[in-house]
Image 1 (cartoon, chains in turn purple, green):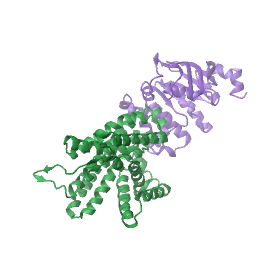
Image 2 (tube, chains in turn green, brown):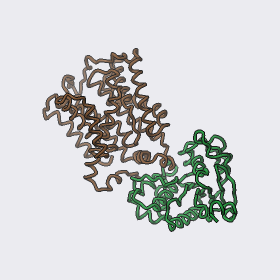
Image 3 (cartoon, chains in turn blue, yellow):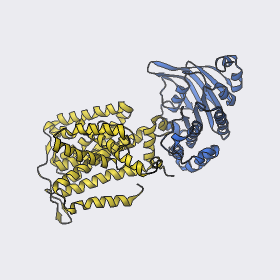
Image 4 (cartoon, chains in turn cyan, purple):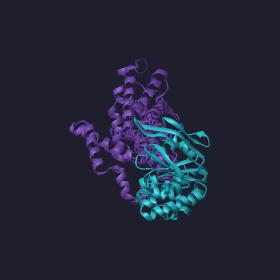
Length: 234
Length: 325
């Protein structure tokens, strides 16, 4: 479904991605793992259209996304849940969610999708009228993911959803990601929490210094000596 | 706009003021307050609602004022139509400005608007065949106007007062309407976190360009009114940076992003500026600067913002943002 080909992305003179390539299949959970500065977030931002690559292409079912503005990428069903949640802190939970269904194609489905988000995250129904900035970290992450789902994504890209969450919330988040994938949404998961990400991913890619250095099924990667040593500390 | 009745009542009450027989000085001050309200509200739409701080709004006021002058003095089109054309011209001019400047964010955007304003000022100063250069334009006599068989007396302040009320009402009502609309929610999203707004698929440049055009239309209207009322326009009067700053002051002192803020800010600053100028003989901009510092330090939400917060429940302000189904 999504193919990333020979992506090279630079911030000014600093190249963050060199020849990154991977693919995501329909209804898969694919994990993109790697250390700080490996280029994970850069990859997601490039797919979203927030950054322009110097070389290479991002294709969605064959269509090149790299020249499209972010809004057009979202309209094609590729939605990013940004790192650090990035909620509209002064707005209520409900308004944050409704803003997720911004583009024209999504508007008629607002009510029905809001209901679905509330089913996935019952806590958000209770907090619907509350100002988003006053929620706990875990609840804010739920809003961020819910907001992403409101757009009706085919591919949901999650950037560090477990960042800064209590262990019990991390477990909950992983459960929810699997649930979302079961409902037919393809998930591209970027995580520093390698162990958790690979545990639920069908396939994974390991990024190091802007290059994909390893790939395989989640289980294979978890068992791979290099991954175990470098990321799991075993 | 959620409640039409209070607006109708407020506008009607404002229109009745001349019947109370105020002196022409009082009417003059009220006209100034309303003109500044319009200009402050114009800036507030972009700077307050969308969080895009422009230091160049004088350029748009200038386009409105010059359009009004040129249409009247060169083509004989009456200034009351000229004001509307001035608003439209400013909105039109704002489109390329927006497409250019909105590629930049934060302080870089603000600096770009400053540069654009300087360009407009230099054009007004040097494009003599169109603008009369530094000499500017002077209206010696306004054209006759008959409303329902009654000839408008241009020596009286009343017709200008009525026009000023309508302009300020247009500025405040449209602010209120945008705030309650879907567009208003996008603006809040952009103001709070532009990256997140893009991530949810909001076409931020388009939304900002639309809002700038709205803001420019109001600024152009205000500029047209300036030409109509003072009957004299030159580059120093309508294209200088001081004017841009006064628009910022009014919106900030009154309350950024609030509907009533510009009216409060304009009242406060105009009234006190008149007093300071009359009694102390000080430059009123010194006073503007001081009150701006005090407000930012002690009342960052502005005078109206503070009053509004005290009158509503703590969560009321945030609940104002409604998206509609």
